[in-house]
Length: 186
Image 1 (spheres, rainbow, N blue to C red):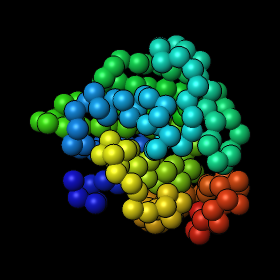
Image 2 (cartoon, one colour):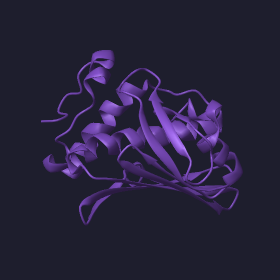
Image 3 (cartoon, helix red, strand yellow):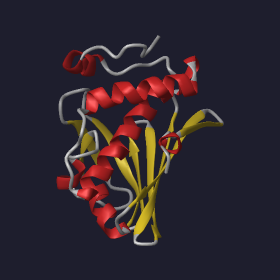
């Protein structure tokens, strides 16, 4: 995949905004599935903890590891190892799908959310999370700090998605911890 292909795409579906990401990972679905579902791996790439049973319909609780926001509730919607994981993450729906591809797999992430003005912010966030996921499955350290990487990627999404999709910036707690995000929410 080229760097340009790694950018997620955005579409409007009724009243919802939908981000689509696709990544090829050089590991089989079972290994990537572990990174998607095991707490020890999630800590390396997912923005919150996931508390709750890994089964369809189970209530979930999410907490930010660095207090970037208040804890919130969700639900496990689909849990089909090692191919589909879908959950409600507050008002957003996250759907991860894995399909074998040679010795590796293709990962698709679809994020559906009601507030279009946060599309650039969230697209940059999930973009960086997926980059971090690749490092987790490779068992490699990150070559950058996530807040710095988010800032760089966010500028690209603001340019790609436009001002209507860039009205909402990061939470105040994130900016207090990491510094202001230039151009976000303007």
